[in-house]
Length: 299
Image 1 (cartoon, rainbow, N blue to C red):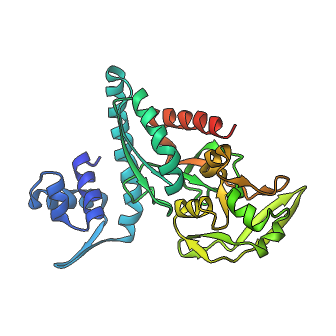
Image 2: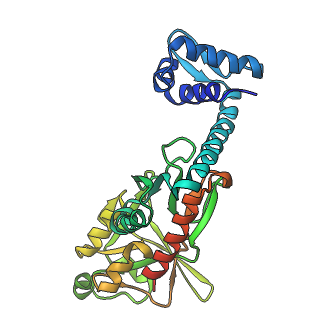
Image 3: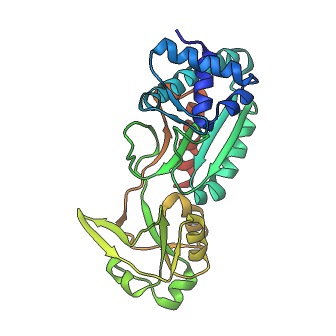
């Protein structure tokens, strides 16, 4: 069986693209790191990294083996952490990714409360509207809206029946009128959201089993969900947002939901994890905490 050190040298070399960098991160000499990598390749009987004097890259076999090694090291670390938790209480690092709008305006305050309940848990938060790569980025779990597309990930439902909602400020509706049907959006200013270079130019609504797709245009377009929400609050037009993002604004009367008898596009809210073995007790506690807070917010 391969030693833990050999596996760590392989993972860190693959991540950094440099054997020297991997050695420094593990407090090894470059020679010791090279020996560890060669030892691993010899035991496996395959070349994991193609090396030259100028570059280093994963072989096809190395790419396939890398995910298994990551999981093995994570599982081992989790087992060690579980032993510590028996005597120290819930502790360790939670590396969490979340959408920008929800993260800044809702999640941050919640995490303060979560940290007060679990002072030994350390938090690392990545806010970005682009989905974090849970196999590559420095995050363990991610909050995401929408139906999961990656079947290799584990989805822990937070709000499974969550939807998007069309909404606008009272000031905008007073100046331009309140549309009664989704098709009336064509004559209104709409605030569009762009993700991964693609603008969401089609909004979906459903009523009594009938689906209505509305092609929308507008002068405002942004790849940051929080900016779209701010535009709506400023009275620039109608936004199509995840209800969790605007629930507080709706309760406070800052935004008015539209088309009450039409349902917006389904946007289930999930906590995503790379593998079920990585659903640690920390993750389970955070999951239950988020379920409770979201239920309270949406009442």
